[in-house]
Image (tube, rainbow, N blue to C red; front, side, top):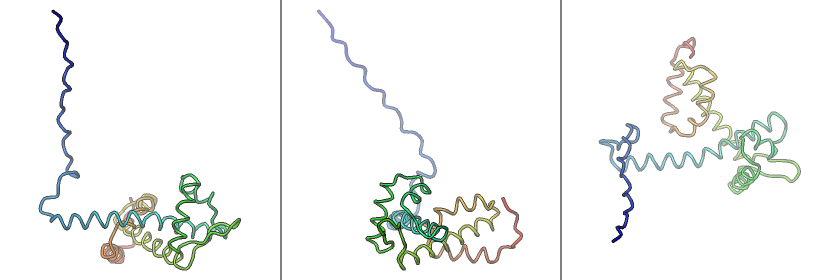
Length: 170
């Protein structure tokens, strides 16, 4: 009589311990958490548009126009990625593409670029007022400005205005 060899059962490993950042928020109502997630998703959608129009404005200021190849090089992405985003920005009324001439901002695009730049300056100044080095503040503020509420941004500006101008850096 032959005996059948059974396959070994896979060992069930325990889930890795949860970090404090992943732990459920105790005492925060579900509606408040959901609203926070909605705001974060909205900020991520807007972030890309703001980054593109801000970069386009910088390129136009520096060289008179923004070309797709320059945008791709500055962002470190492929030209087809830029083309897709420029199409979306054009549909939103933020840019105009002219054949053989590059990309230009509409009035709405210029307004958005200026608002994004102003938010960036507030966050960067706030980080510097906390003692962060200018290089790190510049790098870290890129992205933060898209994710803070107007209320938080206003508080950062008030803090910065009250901070001593000779605060130690980094």
